[in-house]
Image: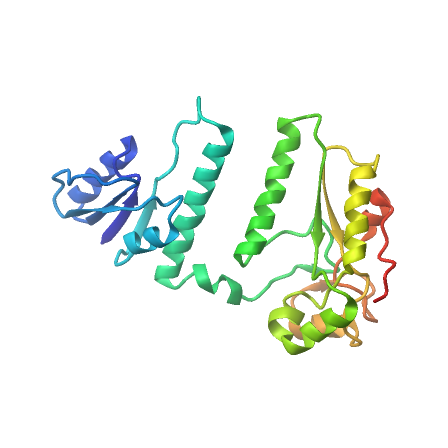
Amino acid sequence: MKIAITGARGSVGRTLVKLCSEAGHHTVQINRTHTEHDGTPNSEMRTADVAKDYEGALEAFRGCDALIHLAAIPDPVGKPNWHVHSNNVNSAFNGFHAAGELVNAIGLVFSNKPLHFDYFPIDEDTPQRPTDAYALAKAEAEYQAKCFVDWFPQLSIVCLRIHEVAPLKEARKRHKEKWHDSGVRQLWGWVNPRAVARACLLAVESDNITGFEIINIISPTTTQETPSEELAKRYFPNAQIRGDMSKNQGFWTTDKAARLLGWMHDETE
């Protein structure tokens, strides 16, 4: 097997390269800066800063059958928090994505993966299953927020889950023209820009927020005249219907926004 190893000159990496060689595998040692060949049999050297150079990582992995991804800042002591976090998160994402793209399993086909929902309407406790870079970034940001309020106890953070920001007419047109990529994937949701702005202001003015909260911000109705239950059964037959969706009710709940922020989607257009 041809195995790519990032961080190959680190303390674990050096031992791993030797172990792979002894087991009869070809190794591709990938390091952030140019490194002379170390004499390991059946091994080659490539250079890529995986955390900063996605295209470089993609080329470094090319032709390999497997990836062992060790590249990271291993010891955070004495280093700025932002630097450790940015480097290690980017390194992980670029490594996973490049590997997925090359084996045609994940990566660029994320956006074509079918969506899965356990139930409708979707509340803030619904399990998140990101299937594209944008959704993954949002999920990561929410996890960061949850951690930061523990890290800084005086801090309160509200993460608003905002969907398809546009006036109704514009969102309806977009959903009609791009039915699957926009309509179905967005569950025919929309939210007026002014409604979003009001929610943002209410979030910073509210006395009901302590610690970390996630709140859905979306219109209580879809862009469609077709009953939502019918759409759900047609496109997501395995999802459980937990509420009244006999008309064009939205696919997300907004009860929490009303309870904590006093927010309602008053805009009808």
